[in-house]
Image 1 (cartoon, helix red, strand yellow):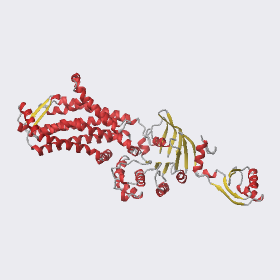
Image 2 (image 1 turned 90 degrees about the vertical axis):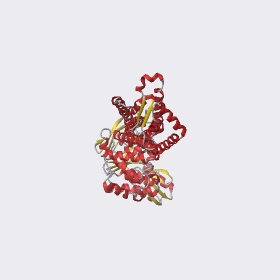
Image 3 (image 1 turned 135 degrees about the horizontal axis):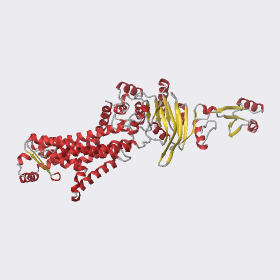
Image 4 (image 1 turned 180 degrees about the vertical axis):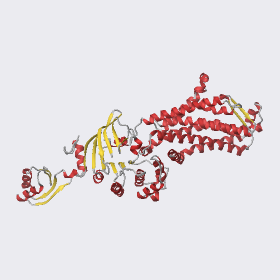
Length: 303
Length: 282
C-alpha cells in the first residue's frame, strides 16, 4: 500500500534521512519511532509531497508521489500534531474548505463523519473555542473525508488526556477492523505504538536501525522474575544451566534452555521456588536498548 | 466547478478574518474625513479659486463626482496600497506561518492549483475593494454635496486636465477610471503575493512590497528619471487616468494594461517557482 524506497534527504548540508526504506501493507498499522530529529516528520513530509527527497521514492497504492502526487494522495488522510485549522471559521467550514481540495464536499458524508467523531453539537462553533481533544476529533474528521484507504498519523495523541488517548486508539483500531484501513503511526508514546501497531520501524539520526513485528519482541527475550529462598544454591544451578543473574530476582536464560527444566533442577537442589514468571519485554525496554546500543537482537536487525 | 468551490473557500477565509475589514473601515473613515474638510469654508474657497482660475463654474464642478475622484486619487496609492500589500503578503505566508498549509498539502492538490486559487482570491479582493471604496466615496460625497454636478479631474504629473459638465458624462468616465484603477491595483497585490510565496514572514512580504511601491513612486518624481517614467510600475498603474481625457487614447491605455498584465503573470510565475521548490516540513 505504501512503499518507501531508499529515501535520502539533507537540510542545509546536514543529513536528515539516509537510505530509509520500509513498506506498509494493506490493512496494517505500522509504527514509526525515533527520537526528536530522527527523521520521522521528514519521512511523513516526503510521503505527502511536502518535502522533496534528494534520492528515493514513495509509492502510495502504486502511484509515485514525486510524479503523480494527486493520484497518490487521493486515498490518503493525514493528521498532524497540533493541527492548525482556520481558527476564525467553524469546524464545518474548515471541513468544507479542506475537502474542496480533495475534489469536492459531500454534506451527507461530512455529517456522518462528524457524528462518528462525536462533534455534531459543536461543529458549527468557531474552532478557536475548541479544546485540544475536539481539535483532534476535527482533525480525524477531515482526515476521513473523503473515504481514505490509508491514514498518516503524526503524533496524533500528543497532549490528549487518558480518555482522549483511549478514544482515539479505539477509533483507529475500529477503522482498521471495519474498513481494513492502513495506518502509518508516528508517535513518541511507545505504549500506544505497542498496543496499536503490527510492525514498527525505528529511526535514529536519519537511518532505519530496526524494523520488526511488535508481537514478536517479547517472545524473543527469555528473561524471568524469580523468587526463592536459597540464593547461593540457586545461583550455582542457574550458572550451570548457562543462565545469568541480571539483578536480584531477575535472570536471563539462553533460548535453548527449557525454563521448566531449570525450575525442576532448582527444586532438585533443595531450593524452594515461590515464583518463576517470564518478563515480557516492553516496546519501551526494547526501544531504549536499541537506542543505547545502536542495535537490538541481531536477528531482528536487518541493517 | 471544483476550482469555484475552492475559490469560494478561499474567499470565505479571506472575508472571515477581521483584519480583512480593516481596510474597509479605514477607507470609510478617510472618506468621512475628506468630506469633512471639503465642507469647510476654507476648502470650498480654495476649490472655488482653483476652478475659477481654470475658467470653470464652481457650482457645476464642486460636486460629488469631483470629490470622489480626489478621494481615490489621494488615497489609493497610499492608504489602499497598505491593505493590498497586507492581504497579498498574508495570503500564502501567513498560512504557512500558522501551519494551515500542512493540512492543505495532505490533499491531492497541486501547488500550482493552490496558488491559482489564492491569486484569484487576492485579485477579487483587490478589485472589489477599489469598487467598494469608489461607490461608498461617491455616495458619501453625494450625501454631503448632492448627486448632481459634473466631473473636474486634474493630475498634473500625468498631464490630466478634464472637465465634464454633464453628470452622465462625468459619471461614465469616473466609473471607467474606477474599473481601471481596480485592475491597476492588482499589480500591487501581485507583488505582495509573489513575496508571500517565498520563505518569508507575512509582515516582511508586506513591507518589501510597500518599499518597492514607494521607491518606484519617489524615483519617478526625480527629474533625472522623467525621460524614463514609462518604465516605472506606478506610472503604468496610473494609466486609468487617461480614461478621463476628453479623447480617450485607447492604444496608450491598452499598452499599459498589457504591460501590467504581463508583469502580473511574471510575478505569479516567479512566486510559483519559489513555492514549488520549497520544502514544507511537518
